[in-house]
Length: 196
Image 1: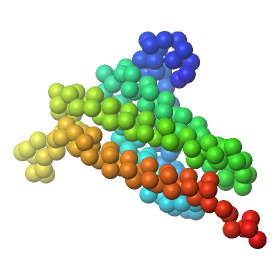
Image 2 (image 1 turned 180 degrees about the vertical axis):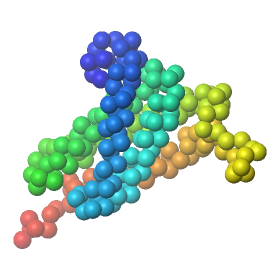
Image 3 (image 1 turned 135 degrees about the vertical axis):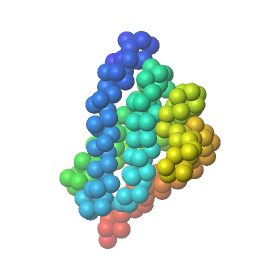
């Protein structure tokens, strides 16, 4: 992705066509984090990995992948870059933790790089949603109108507007608060075993 950025704006626009299929496979693997927590391979709650993976899957599979016009937007490139950077620091920490290897530098990066990257990702997810609103309005993709056998209607454009106007920001508050608490616990809480 960084190589594409150095080659200029045109190559940045084509990044999704180059890495999209691989990226989708890797993002599906993120749901393994939820399973790992449930079976006790990793510590913590399964709730936040489930929410994060679900939101990313929604944005990647429904908003980016299914709308070819979005593939070429600047927001898609930067969102994929931010997501990749987050994982670049997160997974080495998880691997060293599973191996019971404590590398303070990796731990410090894992619990601090989120400070600029999570808000950037949240903003870019909102931009991608906003860019999808006129496309969803025009195509009525994922919308269900009455009458139908289920006697239920769903207007995807309205859902996207609610998502951008409300859901993203509520989710952002909880995710950023969770990351802040994790950072304080991991970096600033003294280990009781070290005191004795």
